[in-house]
Image (cartoon, rainbow, N blue to C red):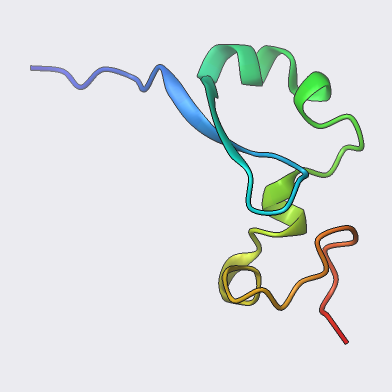
Length: 65
């Protein structure tokens, strides 16, 4: 049996710690609506270990001082 492609995906919103379950194709075809600044929440606050531990500034995506 062939695996089905996922219909939904988690969208990392620019608001810190806000995940939204969205339609995968809509997210792909309307990427600029989901990421108007060109930088998504994954880059801003979901950045690997530092992001998961709250060591990134949510508005810039850079390390906290």
